[in-house]
Image 1 (cartoon, helix red, strand yellow):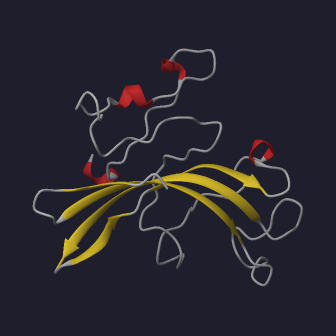
Image 2 (cartoon, one colour):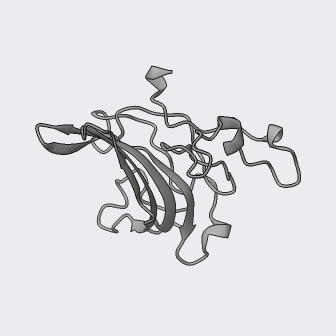
Image 3 (cartoon, one colour):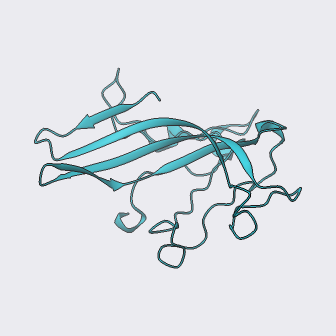
Length: 163
């Protein structure tokens, strides 16, 4: 939802920002063996989820391919109780990479965030009014009633290996 895609001038690279709203879960037939399969009440885990993608794409031999898939979940919510009662780490973040985990990511990035964390995901594009890139410190969200300096460091969409 709310997709914004920008393509470079020579048409070989693109950046996309998309919101996600999903209904997810683990089927009962595999819940006992899946690392995210059972909830605290012993039931197959199922949840609502909201997040944001800030991806990069490359065009190779006329075919668009995902270059960097970055997904930032904002919140999880149990079907029965809703997001405001979801326990911390309800859907655990990956801890193992591919190929050890066949469904795991290529690398682990320590930028975990879930509600009530309200930091803003950096934008791949400049501010539409000012034309300037938004400063990382302006993407912080203060703890309620406190100045932004009390918050965690800003999130990043840079590859950790390129910093």
